[in-house]
Length: 184
Image 1 (cartoon, rainbow, N blue to C red):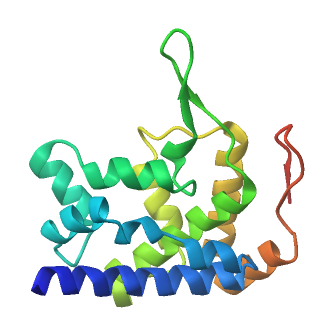
Image 2 (cartoon, one colour):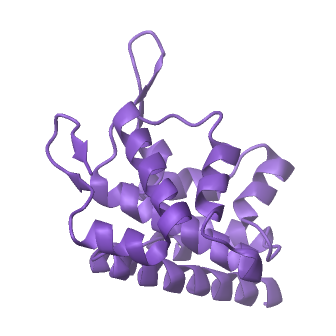
């Protein structure tokens, strides 16, 4: 019961931070619904089994098994993950689809939440951008999505979370239409 309880508490802490960040950005429903699939049997069981407390149990499961059923389920049910927006062309090439604005914001709030929960007192405003550059290789983003991500992460690093929240909430960075226009 110990690892299950600790994992449950970690999910709850993470959801609370992400809710706070999403709410501050004006995306209350995104914050409420964020990561609800983590409570599903598919995700909860294996993540509790691989729980370590200082990093994602999904990474530990991948290291042990070479894959993670929890991750397969999670990314398929949560559009704030970039993998949700990957498709394949006729020749097998990877096609990164543009992420809708609200999911880009939720993804950034998710990175902030994970950094604060796993990093604790060591978390800084530069952490989300540092994390992005650390994991960038091997990830596929539509160029417009990537431009928005970097712009927002640099805003957080340079001006702080409060400015990020206000810019997003006020429409300072809006997704305009389906042609791919993000505008500052």
